[in-house]
Image (tube, rainbow, N blue to C red; front, side, top):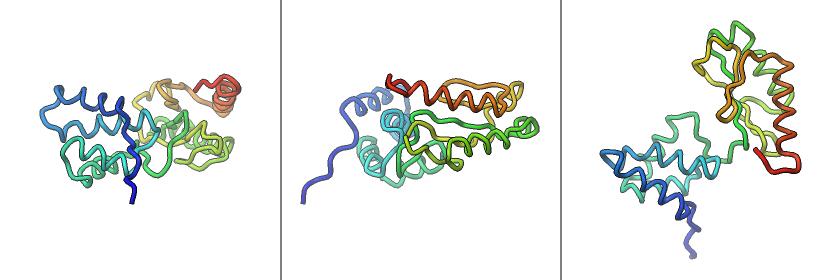
Length: 170
């Protein structure tokens, strides 16, 4: 039987190993290692968990335990090119955050946690983004979208569509 193809690239392994001197144990490198893989693949497949565990000298269950503790990581399939975290903390909820989440999901044709068919967008909810002054808000990639309305949510969706049409940008 042929061995499974490796998930971790040489570049990913080097990026993970670069954390070794910064942490007191290999186990402490688990979370940064998961981020390295997630950043490159937009998910952390089970085979990558096994490879990370081997690299860190851990049992795969230890890496899987860390992965499943955080809702940030997806395992079964990649998240969208853009992840939109819609805040639903009390401040955002009072200012329409739940309505923004519902509107965004309806307009994108997905439920919370799902990715659009074209793979461009995953809409998720966040318990708190720590930006109550700008409620309701969305964290899209590294950009905080402030004081959202259904109109600005539609403009965000248009931006996602237009940024990806024909030019390969995210």
